[in-house]
Image 1 (cartoon, rainbow, N blue to C red):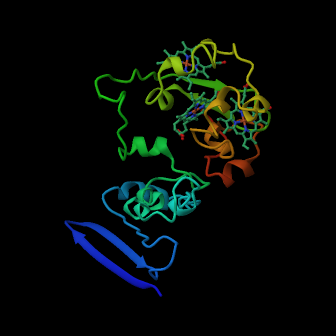
Image 2: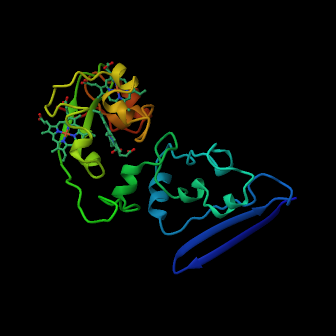
Image 3: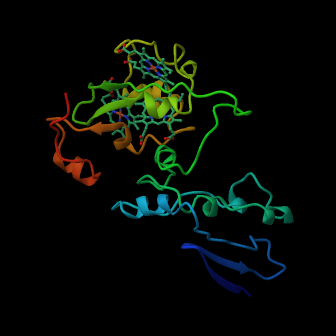
Length: 220
Ligand code: HEC
Ligand code: HEC
Ligand code: HEC
């Protein structure tokens, strides 16, 4: 037996939308599910404006293999799907953390005690050995907002343009970009987030399907 409850609250233009369900007492499944949308509606608006907007893809606490679903304390925790409900998403339904940062939804600290500042470097590196795939524009900015230079230089990349023999094979095997992407950073299966600069040889089809503007005048 499920008791449903829907509460709608409007606080100075901000709407909080809450749905709670309480299953029968002898059930071992989650006893509460919440969907809350509030202040961070910016992210949701951005996401809804994209033609490939989807639900956030995340595991529920009870089935994530980390939390014990039979322990009552689980009900005191916030569900990831609720916490992330208004974040901007990638095509695959992962949170787009770069966009979340740009929109001011999150403000990461440089260190635990919030004493230091990140050294942000505004320098893009273009990788052009990509066949028909759009070129890869590596943005130092998006990385150095949360990573120190020493996270990458010199252990993962020699600090010189063209000095690293990077290929898609090696990335998929977990080297170079693959040291982080598909692990702690966005998935390798959103190709277009890296291969984002179309060139003469890139089929228009590819650009259209991913919402990338038509072949470039800017590419060089
Ligand atoms: C994390 C960033 C990233 C993602 C995501 C990514 N690539 Fe790449 N890809 C690269 C880089 C960097 C190169 C090397 C380019 C160079 O050396 O000039 C590359 C090279 C390539 C090449 C050229 C041939 C080769 O083996 O090096 C192809 C084809 C390619 N990628 C296809 C894909 C496809 C298809 C996807 C999605 C399934 C994808 N890539 C996702 C970064 C990425
Ligand atoms: C996420 C990894 C990453 C981080 C963090 C990072 N870099 Fe880089 N850096 C790269 C890559 C990739 C290249 C290109 C290497 C190539 O072309 O083979 C590069 C290239 C460079 C180059 C060579 C440019 C040229 O034209 O030859 C310099 C200088 C550099 N980085 C400085 C820095 C500094 C300073 C920081 C910290 C503020 C930093 N990088 C942080 C990945 C990173
Ligand atoms: C040390 C870890 C690390 C390495 C190595 C790394 N990245 Fe990243 N990258 C990140 C993180 C963290 C972010 C931001 C969080 C996220 O998007 O998941 C990011 C973001 C990006 C973005 C920004 C996407 C956007 O939407 O603005 C691009 C593009 C990118 N990486 C490409 C690359 C490429 C290409 C390489 C290899 C040449 C590479 N990264 C190597 C950790 C890394």
